[in-house]
Image (cartoon, rainbow, N blue to C red; front, side):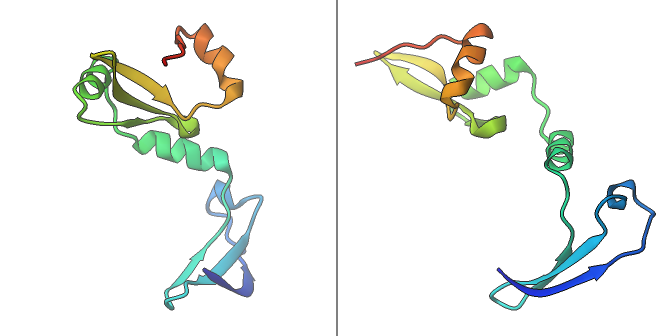
Length: 115
């Protein structure tokens, strides 16, 4: 995506999200589509996505995952998915960082080395 390097200042005070950053960016994609927008804080994005997220109960997530019908995408790049180990279906968590291991174990997750 190429930027045409043009920035416009907005004087609108209608929205509280515009209070600190009023710079508007005009972008143009490689295929010619033009887009205007502004930078928003990551916390705003996370809150907005969480508000729009599909709401499932723990029992529904468990059933769908164990049946192999879905992979549940979680925050921080983690996923719950079904795997088969020694003939038994399990739900595994993947995509976590090394730093998250202690927190996950404190929350009740177990780890094992399978050869």
